[in-house]
Picture 1: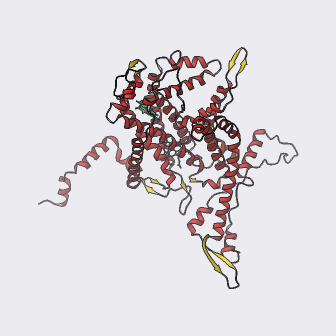
Picture 2: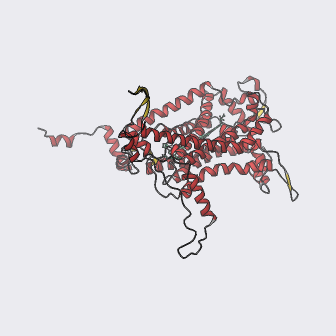
Picture 3: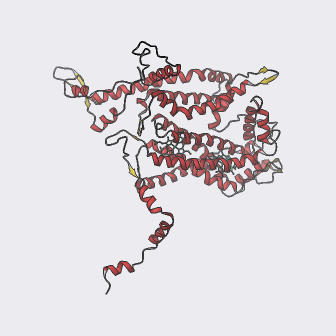
Length: 543
Ligand code: HEM
Ligand code: HEM
């Protein structure tokens, strides 16, 4: 007769369990999974933007691998004999001809090419919007500054990966773009010509650049990006995700859904959704029809030549610049190109260093895990919107010909608009955004004290009409009042107790000034105090 003990000792574990045991014995997965499977993720729609970046990146890699199977990264000249009749017999590089083959002769080739290209555009857009979400909510503050830098590098590398990919087919449009970059490199004093010779292996375009860009595009940059994405996600895990203020949420806990099964199921579904949407867009909207553009020839330029959107701002910088040229010690300096070339990295570096500048200005060394509502940090929000508006003005400048032809405007008017807008638009958007934020803060304070307007009008016995206000729930009251309202830094006494004058460095003065612009007058509408709230809700207050 078998007993219960016998049963357990003789029972054979199901196959799945045995595989899991086998793997666990060798990889220690169980411990790792047990520690992290129930990790909590807070929920908010804006936290999905990082996910869109991640999924579009995966889609790019998957489709990129397929393209490598058919793309020939060579500038050898061939005569085209593929199935696209209008280009039959035309001389072109192997790169161009193999991209035509991908488009017309490889099964599914055109769709995959279009998915790759659309995913690249969406990837960079998702990164920009994700970055702005992190910016506007202050999620870059301690301890996430390093992760912000990882993200920043991903954004910059993504731009260059996109640019190198765009250049691979060696069509007239992308060749014009490469020529543009080479022109910018040539404007660098002393070393410009050497860098150009080194990059292109001699005179432009030479016979090497497609092969070189290819290694950079499919190996070097994506490899770096993969490492950075892994590091980025590990840091999100280690720091835990920020959350918005709410009942029960503190700087020390995270309220949300467990990673497994809920978050994983949602994330998995979302991946297919992103893939589906990109595929539908790629299936119905043509992108980069290189057959209509033709192969690259250095002696030709196509009209309406445009880079992909993420490079547009750098193109804008050059297009709106006056064509200044000076002679310096017998050398020609092309300032019209060189100055934009200097501003280009500065625009990017401003993003990278922002968290450090803000921490310095606000003298804030504390950890922050509760995300800010943008309105409660008006100076930061206004700065972000000003940066975006400036970026947009430059994008308009980069596409000045397209704006001119589509909206029947003069190209000179657009160029002048961009020249003036470059200086004026960010200032105007800064001021307007700050006013908006203060208005919203005022509205929050009103809501806390007087509740929501219900739209119901009541007539009092003595004839007065009043609108009924519904008091907010406790949770909402908390959300609207949880934020801090720090005081700006002060210079302190400039004379010590013995009457000796203390030297105040200009750096300290600048910091106090900036701190006032962050937290000083006109940046915060005082939160209602508990006394005010009691006074009003106890019926003594005036509605
Ligand atoms: C390949 C590109 C990127 C991928 C795949 C990626 C992915 C993610 C994911 C999945 C999250 C968690 C969910 C979320 O908050 O959206 C996240 C958080 C974060 N990302 Fe990215 N990201 C990328 C680029 C960037 C960029 C360009 C920046 C900023 C310059 C950035 C800064 C951050 C920061 C600071 C967090 C933590 C936010 C928090 O805890 O609230 N990331 N990222
Ligand atoms: C962030 C990463 C990437 C971005 C932003 C990106 C972007 C692009 C773009 C815009 C093109 C031009 C497509 C066109 O013809 O219209 C391209 C071409 C190409 N990409 Fe990528 N790509 C990335 C990663 C990769 C990876 C990882 C691989 C391979 C493993 C790859 C392989 C290719 C190949 C072979 C081409 C040339 C074929 C063609 O133009 O259709 N890409 N890429």
